[in-house]
Length: 122
Image (cartoon, rainbow, N blue to C red; front, side, top):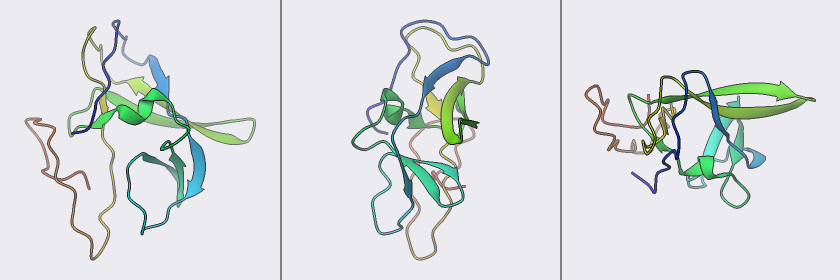
């Protein structure tokens, strides 16, 4: 697990919690996947240098948030929405849904969920 992000107040189911901000980039398999979120196809948001606090949200196999993508004035955006009620002080999580890359080891998952699949890749 990484740093993590907690909410300061209760979030309702379906509520926009935070937007995932960064720079739109093509995915390059040789770079580390620290703060990348897939938008569509091979296009990702890289939040490494100019991103929002959403980059600190950890993966979980039983997440309390979901990522929704939408287009605003021709630009694809990504929002983190509450899948259920999230209590004040609770850590935010979403399923990264990374694809397995042939020849590369899978990333171990440390979410601790009852249904943990043991890797971040699906």
